[in-house]
Amino acid sequence: MHRGAGGLRQIALGAAIVMFGAMQSAAQDADPAEDLMPLPSFADCMNEEAARYERALRAAQGMSTPQKFEIGDTRGTGYCGSVGFVLCDRKGDLARVQNCQSLFALEQDVLASKVRAGLPVPDALGETGTDVERELYQRLYALAHGSSAGPDCAGDIPQRRTWCTAWEANNRLSNAILAWQLARFLGAAEPAVVAGWAETPPPQRPQARATD
Image (cartoon, rainbow, N blue to C red; front, side):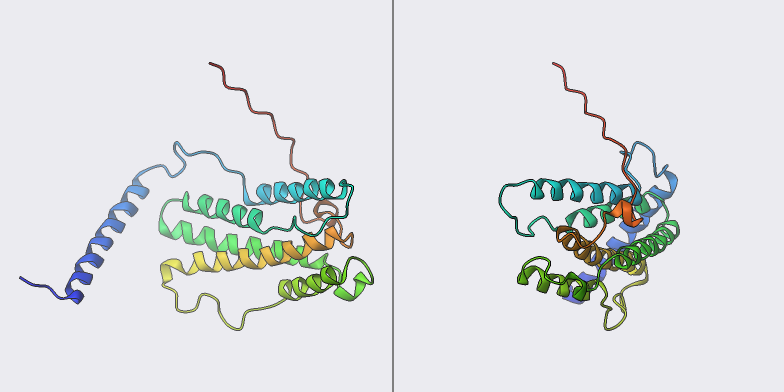
């Protein structure tokens, strides 16, 4: 019997619902943390990201010729966001995952607020840096302090809403971190540890060399 496109979509949707139910049931039956690679907390990850930037900054400042602001990067903040989401996913059932994501969004917004508090206003730069760098900082500062025109996750399905909210919080944090990175590059902001929004990460142990 011939089925229309609508009928095929209904079959596919029904199969997806059944598969999701089976996966959710399996997740509830299993220990969420069993046999999983340990991950740092989001805070520990951001501590390491702040330390990584300071190392990159010292390397750039140690070069014999003046360097352009090319070490600014939001990938580290995004990575730490991914770590936070994986940790939430390991909570198991959907209700616990969504509660974790809601708390994770709040944690990121609190951190972003602390980062923004240490950003100098653009006029405070004076003649620091080049015209291009000062103009860039003015834009990044405005971006870090900006707000959305409306709810970022409006219209999303309930199962994804907390996920979306937490990712939007990561985007806001990334904007604040990038502005801080440029301010640090220009010598106009304090290191994260001094500013109080990060802690010094413990020294990393060297990995054991594989033996034949």
